[in-house]
Image (tube, rainbow, N blue to C red):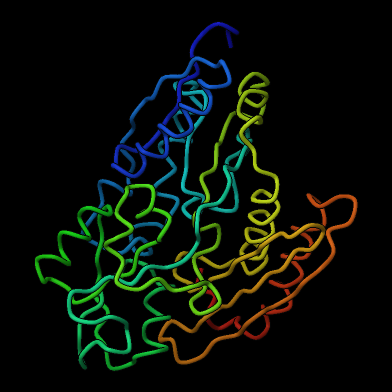
Length: 308
C-alpha cells in the first residue's frame, strides 16, 4: 500500500455502524493518518425476515466487509466485536480493540419498569438466542418474538406497540446518544451480556504492515485481553449462533476475572463458569488459555445445547 494513500475504512451503513466508523476515522486522523469511509451493505442488513441463526449467523454482518478486505477494496473494517465469528478467514487479522464501552444490557418498555413488572403474556422482541433464553429463564410466561433491524427500527417497533419490551446493548444506545431511552440498565452481574459486547474491533489484512502499524496505535490493551479471553471461551465451546452463550471478562492490574454461562434454549437450565487468575508476564497467552480452559470444562455439561 502506498504510504501516502488514504486508508479505506469499510463499514456497514447503519447509523450505529457509521458512528463507530467515524469514531475510528477521527482517532486515526488525530494521529496523522488520512482515512476515508467506504459503506458496504452486508447480508445481515439485507435479510430481515428471519432470525440470524436461521439466516446463517452473526457472521452475516461481517462477511462482505471481510470479502472487501481480501479483494483489497478496503484497508480496514470496523466491527462490533460481538458480531465477529471466532474463526477469521485466512489472511485477515484483528489489529486493534478500542476501549470498551459499558457492556451492560438495557431494558426498554413503555409498559413496565423492569422485566418482572411486565404483564403476563407480554411480547418481548429480540433476534438474539441469548436474550431469548435469558428472558424465559426469568419469565417463562412471556412471549418472545423475532425482532430484527437496526436500533432505530427496533425502537420504532417498540414505540408503535408491536412489542411490549426490547433489550438492547447499552453501548450502542450511548454511542447514538439514546441512553435516556433505557427504562432499566442491567449490570453484567445481574444479566450477562453477549461475549465482546461494547467493543469496537478493527480487522485488516494480515500482511498489511502499514494498516497494522497505524491501527495498532488505537489498541486498548485491557480491552484486548478481556476480549481474547471471551472469544477463547466461545471457541472452546464451539457454540453456534443457535447456542445461548453469555460472558464478560475484566482486567484489573494483573488480575483477569471472568463470568460466563451457557443456557438451554428455553432458559430452563444453565451452566456457569467463574474464575479470577493472574495474567503473569504474557497476558496475551494467559487470557485466551484461561478462557479456553473454562469453556472446555463446561462442554460436557452443555453438550446437548451446542447446536452446530
